[in-house]
Each structure stands twice: as structure tokens, then as C-alpha cells.
Image (cartoon, rainbow, N blue to C red; front, top):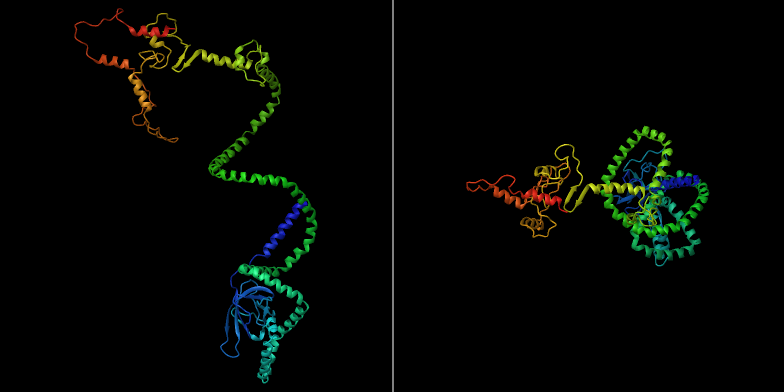
Length: 536
């Protein structure tokens, strides 16, 4: 593992160094110079300006001198830092960059003792030289150019016969080009077969590159920039390459381990590849949920902070619980035995057929077997359930409490003949509208629905407007128009009672006699009430 970590660290350092060396320099213009040549053959606007073999800028313009002897003034801009300090004795030359006719300007910085050339300064023609392209020399050797070249030489000799100083100066400045041309021709002579094959291959490559020549030119420019920057950092790269063999020696066993690990991961990766579409679909569909859960996650974070504070504060309680847990086994064992015993159907005391209907089916451990009854646990809960049903009756008509505890007052003693006042005070039903009592119809009797019932059914079938919803902390919503306010008691007076009240409001007829009052007066209400209470 240590070797793997060190290998990864070294690989990261090498990658960082390569990234730094490949970083593109600033594109700003740092200095501008004028370079004077006898001729500017092959130079183009935007061509390379190299200083010390490193691409440091580009050519931006050309002009001719106004007087004889005419010279070409090339304007060049320096864009790479560190190359804007040319000296006054700097020398420049036009060189051929490739065999396809590309040319560039190559300059040296000059001597350290010489003064610095100012921005916009000019390098004189005496410090420059031009190259003679080999393709022009080869062209001269063919007819009819060689006859023309013979005439040119004859006329040139006649013209220069009286100008030996100028001829000597031209030969001196052309000397580097002639020397390099001689060396180039010697190499070409030795490698003519390879060059012939290269030219044939170059034609095919050129035809293939033609559609993407702009991309190729851009790549060549970037490659030149990278090479220039790397050349400026050669010492640092040399240290890296010197350490590379040791790194590769240590990396070899690690790569072998990685190869074996990668081989073992192939089945897993295939399974992951098969599951990737479903996983992608899940992640896409989970985006709305993730957005909606941001607030909840914040709340959970706040709750976690509060819980952490509570846990820290409960250290003392946890310590006390840990101390008490040492005594827990003494209680836990008999408690476990007791719970297992009362939940064992084999320990039931009697045979109860009802247990067969209520017991869970096999293979539950408490499944019913012939001759068994309820377990102790079931008997405990059955008592609570049946006791509740024994004292509280409930059906579709309402609740009735069978057992009412009274302490003192007229309702405590048992009365076989209660009066109406006692019944009204001590009755056990809930509410004033119990069915069959106080004029309410008995829903168990099949009778025609009253006008009130028909009205209520019609109201129930009528479409209702949408209720108003309000949030927490807001006042309660008022009832809708035409609806009852369910937050207030709703007293429904039976139809018979309303008729009775209407009759009572009518004035009594003046018959001269009062209605009978006393025991002999008819009292139908108490009689009907007793029939309802005592009927089977």
C-alpha cells in the first residue's frame, strides 16, 4: 500500500510538472522590434519569431526603405516573457522551417555587455542574413532555368566587376546560408531514397490533411508554444527525467498488482454496466425528491445538533443506567420466564372453543391445538375487551352506558316506579334526540320518511361549494353560505314537538272551563317512556 501511495504521488507530481510546462504563456505584446533584411523571401505576416530557438513572438508587418539600396523592414512583436531584452549586437537570420516552404526569423539575444535595444529599435542589415531555399537551387538546375541562370551569372559578373566591396558584403552575409545549403544537399544525396518515399507519403498525408489544415496549423502553433516553454524549463525537466527510471522500477510491481485487481473487477464492472441504465433513471427521477428534501435535511441537521447536545447532557444518566444494568439480569430472567409462561397455550387452564377461532394459524408457536384454551396473555386482554363491552353498548344508533355510578341524590336508590322528573334527571342516554324517545321516530320501524328526512336527503345530494382551507395559527374558517356551523351545538327539534309548541302558542278558547289537571289527566309521555325502557 505504501508503494502504491508513493507511486500515485509521484505520478501526480509528474502530471503537474507536465501541465506547468505545457501552460501557455501570456498573449500580451511585451516589445516590438524592426529587423532589416536584404529580402524577405518566404516570410509572411503572422510567421514565427524565435529567439534562442524558442518561439517568442510573431511577425506583424513588412515595409520597404524609401531610398537605395532598398531593404525590407520586418516588424516583429515579442509576446513571451523573458525574451523582450534584445541587445544592440543581436543577430537575426531567415531560416527554413520545413521542406514545404515555411520560413521564420531566428535571432540571438546578443552579448551581455552590449546595451539593451529599446522598444521599437531596429536591427541593421549588417547584423542579418537571409537563407537560399534549396528548392530554388534545384529549380535552377533544370532547363530552361539553367540557361537563364548562365545568362544571369554572366550579366551579374559584368555588373559586379566594378563593385567588389558590395559583392564581398553580400557573400559575407550569405555565407551561413550557403554553408547550410551545402550540408543540406549532402544529407539529401545520402538519403535520396528515403526522401523520395517521404515525398510520396507526404503527398498522401497532405491530401488527407487538406480538409483539416486549420486544425493542423493550430496544433502546430500550440506544439511550438509548448516546445518553447519546455525548452525554457529544461533544467527542471531534466531532474524529473533523471528520477524517472527509479520511479518506473518501483511502479512495475504496483502496476502488476493493479492489473490483477483490474482482472478481478471485470465481472463486477459488467454487472455495474448492466445496472447503469436503471441507476441513471433512478437518479433522474430522484432529483425532485432531492430538491424537496433540502428543507427537511436542514431540519434534520438542526435536530441532530439538538440531539447531540442532549446526548452530551445525558452522560450522567447513561452512567447511572449502566450501573443499574448490572442488577438487571436478576429481574430479567424471572420476567422472561413469566412472559414465556403466560404466552404458552399448552399451559391454558381449560378447553375453550372460542380460542380456536381467535388463535393465529400454524406455524405460529401459539397456534391452537385440540383441548387447549386461551393463553394467560390473551385472557388478560380479553378481560379488558369484554369488560368494556359489558358496560358500554354501541351500535349504529348511538351509545348506552349500562352501568352508571351515582353517589347520593335521588338517582342512588333503586326505584321500581320512577316519576317523570326522576327519569329526566337520572336517564342514561346521551343527548336530547335519542331514537324512539321524546317524540323521535324509531329507525328500526319501517315507516315512510318524514318531510324533515326528505329535506335532509335532498340537502345531502345537493352539490356543496369548496370549503375554505386555512393554515396553522390562522382563525377558524366561517361556515359556508347555507351550511351549518358545526363548531356550535346543533339542536334539531322533532316535527311533533314543533307542532306541539305551535299549538301552545295559540290562545285558549274561552269556554268558561279550565282543562283538567291532576291524576285523572292523560299523561301519555311518561307512559310511552316506560314502554320504551321496559320493552324487551
